[in-house]
Amino acid sequence: MNIKRILLLGVELAGLNSLSRFWTRRRLLGLCYHSVVSDNSPENDARTRIAVTVSQFDEQLRELRKNWNPVSLTQIRNAVENNILLPDRAVHVSFDDGYRNNLIYATPALVRYKIPATIFVTTNLISTQSRMIWALELHERLSELTDSEIEIGGQTYQLPPPESPSRTALALDLLNCVKRLSASERDLLLQKLRTRAELDLTPSWKKELYEFLNWDEIRLLRGQGIEIGAHTLSHPVLSSLDLAELNRELVESKKCIERELGEECNVLAYPFGSVYDFSDEVIETAKRAGFKLAFTLQEQRNKVELDPMKIHRICINREHSIDSFRVLISGLRNNG
Ligand SMILES: [Zn+2]
Figure 1 (tube, rainbow, N blue to C red):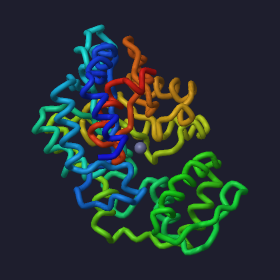
Figure 2 (tube, rainbow, N blue to C red):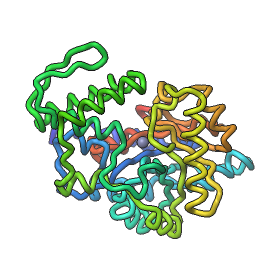
Figure 3 (cartoon, rainbow, N blue to C red):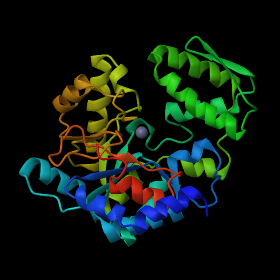
């Protein structure tokens, strides 16, 4: 057992997680997942970092069922609109992007533990095959590129061998540089990479990781009580768009969900979700488009009185052992 594990276990055994849960009990805990993948999906690959395995997910849901009170989107809406208090230690589980693995692996576990959840879908990618969110496509192609260096934003980066763990890790870092480029610079880079690096999506673990749901499957999920929210049309950095494009991404994704599901959709998750990825203008445009609730990925706990257009969520990924998950969600490290 390593030192970190011993320390994290010590925190749990000393009752510090439980104390912190009590201390922060009135603040909603938002959790964001992306993919849930099978246990044999490669572990040391940065591309699977955004996923948790089936076993991890099961263990985490058991913890939520035992020490927390999972709440639905409807309960959050009631808290915001009608001042109906959420239970103490309320937690809301959500998924971003709209992957098929949410249906195959996550939903059976959610049903088993009776935990409500929301899936935020990137509507242009729903019902498509072999299409990816641009940021993940970039990560894939940067991982496969056979060149020894690449220039991004005027800086040159040396590339470790293709497909090596250090390459996929660097590709993930480079993604943050690309996010800071203008949309046209980013598209240019993507076009260049499309001619230079193959997109190999044949391994089954990649299919499992990247395949999107289709609308029939989303209607099936809806029938099982999963709530569906918008995650824009194409997963842009909303704060970098001009007003017309920003409005289109918000209004059209909302309309698309409403058309396909035959019910109102007024909840949004900002793509990427950090403080740099949305702005006051984004919030105002989203409100004008008819969104009543919006979720971030700012790693902090919500205030007792929720800000409906900035409901914070902690992103859960493969790095979190059950011990670090307990510490992370208890609020010991994230009191905001
Ligand atoms: Zn996303």
